[in-house]
Length: 103
Image 1 (cartoon, one colour):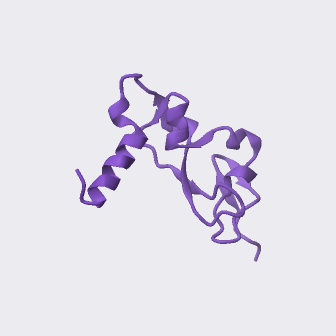
Image 2 (tube, rainbow, N blue to C red):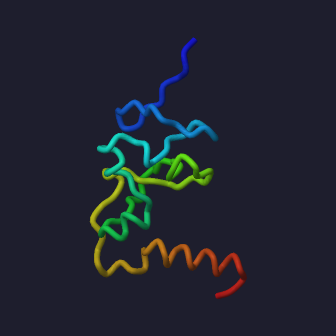
Image 3 (cartoon, rainbow, N blue to C red):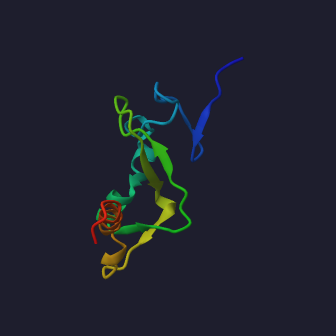
């Protein structure tokens, strides 16, 4: 039988990673590519990821083995400019310092 097709937000994704068959961000159709960003990229654009967001793991490029979690435009909301405590950088720094035993 033929290969199983991969769909993302209603689009058939033709280019999948050779490593694991997951989508590759820079090979998405242009409409999708412009609608998926990482948590930090959305933060820089003035948005934060909703608690209900599921995210989608993709490779950033065809040569990358690592995965990044991307969020679609309907998984974010405009952030409050005073919400620094929810910053992805601050959250990452807190978890890293906790892992190193530093407070």
